[in-house]
Figure 1 (cartoon, rainbow, N blue to C red):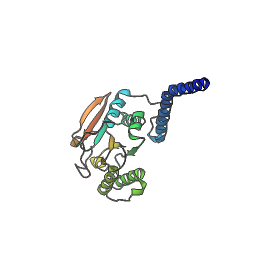
Figure 2: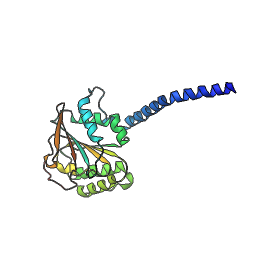
Figure 3: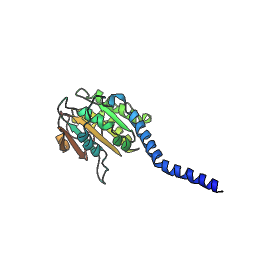
Figure 4: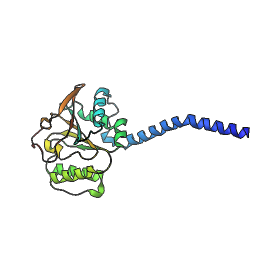
Length: 223
């Protein structure tokens, strides 16, 4: 009996000691799996130097817990062309804290100066198809597409929508935030009509806003 007791005690001790290590290993494997889900085009290039100050501020903003009555959360990275806004956004999207927060549900949309009218509505339709293929529809008006996107986002888990290279405010309005969704935007000029408050970090302006207006709000001029 003593032999069996000592054997049981040894196994129990090893198991208890190994549990934290196994938990750490499982967490690392889970996070690595999320990182591998990030499309190659959305990952920062291997030679890119980390920007911890900027990334920390942006990550903190997109991971904010929503307070009662807040319509949505929008984080914007503003700066001149070639200033590294897209690179900063890629670093954020590959950040393990962000991937954990949204469980890998990060959707990247590249806009640019030419994404207007038909091209814009196509991008909204494509995003809905990526989020929920069963609810994809071929809208021809960006406002209708935006309303449908909002309905899709209202249901389901946390998601992060990344809008890269926004030029016009109708581009922003075409991708509303709803449900448990957050939005990260890169652009060259501050969207003053949204009433955003800028925060300068390392030369890049980071803007955090709650309560962005829905589709059709504002004007369609350059931002």
